[in-house]
Image (tube, rainbow, N blue to C red; front, side):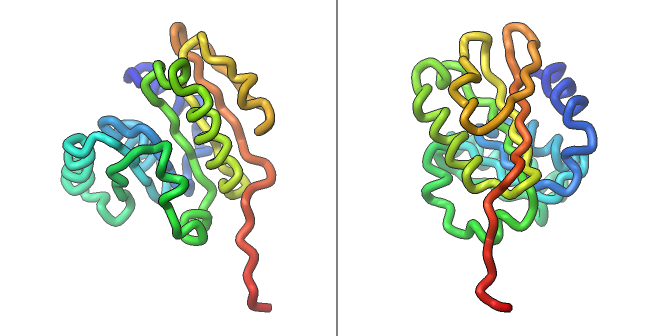
Length: 175
């Protein structure tokens, strides 16, 4: 995501970032997840499949002194929901899901992209926010079953914002 677009996204989100667990699905340089931390996110999980880049993200986290707030998952974002096992810990805070993949994924892996966003939506705590960056060719109607999306045009990019109304609930067995 380009700098001007990232700034526009965080201007739209404004205070909605505060206290959330940022999940940067296709982290790249981790600019989105780290920006979320700088704007008040409580935690960040940065998912990057390119191992050398994931190591660079870990170095950035250490140099910014946010190792206690951020973690890196070096692996495929499409597999992460199936491989993550501690959902109770992850769902203690509402999420800020940041999804800025290579745009080709929306054309070449449409089903995978919709499946990933849907799977995370089903697990997301109430009050979670999704931010999806795509190009003008992606049909956000494919995500309509999740609820309403607020679309912002930044040609050639389109950013979809979505707030989870009734999220995943962890039910305690103790009374």
